Image (cartoon, rainbow, N blue to C red; front, side, top):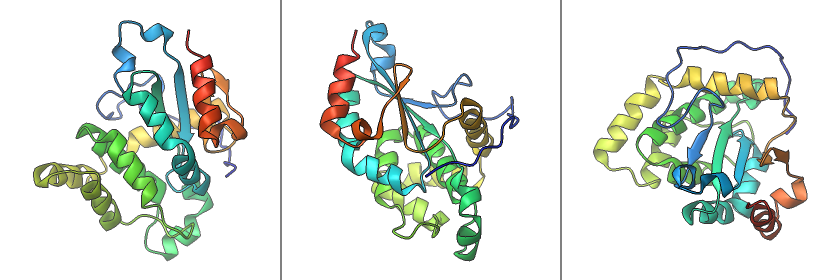
Length: 218
């Protein structure tokens, strides 16, 4: 769970960004609350995560539905902030299983799904398909299956696969990872609510998390 730290990683100013992503955070903003008339009163929850991280998968199981419900109700400004530190930690296992750089590959695919309008559905389906054995990694076929389970039609899937195989968003992913290291985030998942890091007991208890978000509403 703990990330390795390599301070001072460079960013690519010319990196292609998924739809709606901006270079101030490189995060994926979801939901309508971001553009609501009263957006300033709605809490912001940033979640740092690595798609290979078992604890992130557990967070998705325990609290993901509660979080996305608030997003869909317009009560939360949610920003998923991807990192890929496990590509280094799991390099030998990923490579041995034929799936090197799986966090990078999965996050690039996530960016492609964002472009197709499937941010929430793909995010949920990707964690649902997370390998049981850490280090097994995600294959290209796995990610195509995730996109299908997220509901993409034939044309959307074709566009997704082209985007994914061409690694369109690899530089975006690496820029987000550089931001992760610069911010000194020590583990995943990490939740930052209105600028304050949440404790793990709140993160993994959906009732406590919903209450914390409600209490943060201005």
